[in-house]
Length: 119
Length: 114
Image (cartoon, rainbow over all chains, first blue to last red; front, side):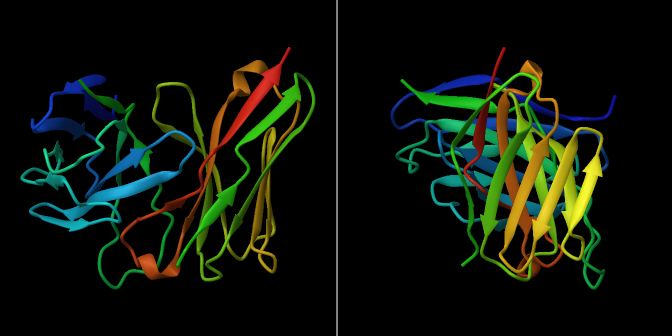
């Protein structure tokens, strides 16, 4: 079955530690995204990538880093610079029509999320 | 900037209709979406509507779009206990180009009482 997989489901971070959240998809999607979800708030975009070896900052990129070395994978590192990391992190993917194409409905497919907590 | 607003909580009885409302500020929005999130899970796309449509119906779901008032609603007919979840409204603003970026509301928690 095609899908998008996040791991681990639960993750704990110690003070001053970097942690990496995994996101893998086998949907052959070009675009991948990381969102952060806090209780009572909508999803906020951290980083996104439209193509391998390229990524862009979202609205709340500070304290986070990403890489996109393979089409299938888009790991997110929460660095020690992120002072309030406790949240539910959601990875998503979509097709990307590319430059010059008309706006199309490129639906987002989401993983099941990773809950990050601080020890 | 773009903003999407939803009420935070709605409670209904099983068998009644539920109406979840959403307002948005970007008049250039192209597509508007409704996503469902069950506890501890990711978001699942329920339905979507293109901005040149007024209404879309899909089985128990009806989406109404009032573009003049920038108001979107999701009606769930014959609400079941399995419909209990958080419902997110989202838009693709024109300025997002083809990035696929969505702007999400805060989510409405729907509680269905037996």
